[in-house]
Length: 374
Image (tube, rainbow, N blue to C red; front, side):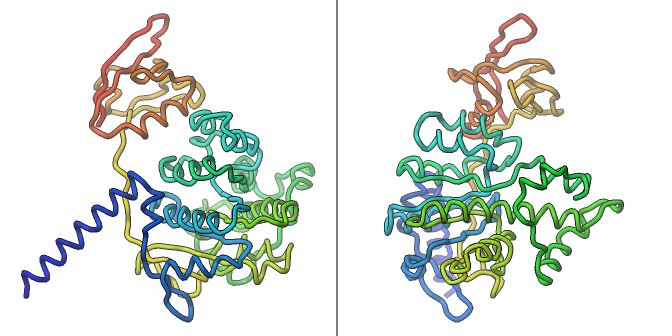
């Protein structure tokens, strides 16, 4: 009996390994054939049944833990299913901030490539999550010409409130904000629990809660504006779980502006059995963890405009190669590096423990070196 159980465990591990490899090599095929269980407050159902139930909804919120690849695959699965049912689907995302909408539009229309999108939206400075996690969704949107909405508020604004307080906002800044409603009592408690151990002793927790509400209300307003201007469209929103849980934050803020949405929107989250919190979301999709492969690390801090080295970590690939502070990287193998985002994108696509040729400017000299990544 012990050998039978061991054999089943080995077979299950092999099947999971093959599935995990497909999720990395061909995420769209992976989500197309994905089968898993879904929990609701009243019953369990299949992923196919969940997709069928979403067809009559206008707004579908799909949450995420930002660096978790399996969460983004569920987002892709929901997007693909909705788009197959109706071509009039748009995608609202937390990952990009609203002032950079023109660059997202240019990317979807094929006028700029990924590197230029990441550079112009200051993605690596403002979001900093591994872009490989989001790439399948953005590529699907570009392939099918689906509008992606940059929902988020500018980081400068929320950072100012968190660091200097609400009273630091100018009249012009306040005029450009949506109306900021205070959170309900339960949401206020949840926010307080999150922030109470993370803020300095001389700061007001209400400022951090107000900054959080700026995020929520701004994303809700931008989403609602799109829905009002495009009455024939559905909207799928991808945002962090805390912006969506318990129908608070974004869903509640949207329903306040369009009351009909109270019955026309749903929330979805995903994760392991340990992550499941009954009642937090309308649907919870059970998933296995999937890790993207490690990628090359330079081990240096760079100027975020022109890929010039500002500092080097001890015992890093950069130090072992002999790179120096002030070196400006201009080519990665045969790819010319126009800016910081070009380099970060190339590093994310290069396996760890591999090598590459770097061309750099050191003062007036052009140098080519071979680097072995950690």
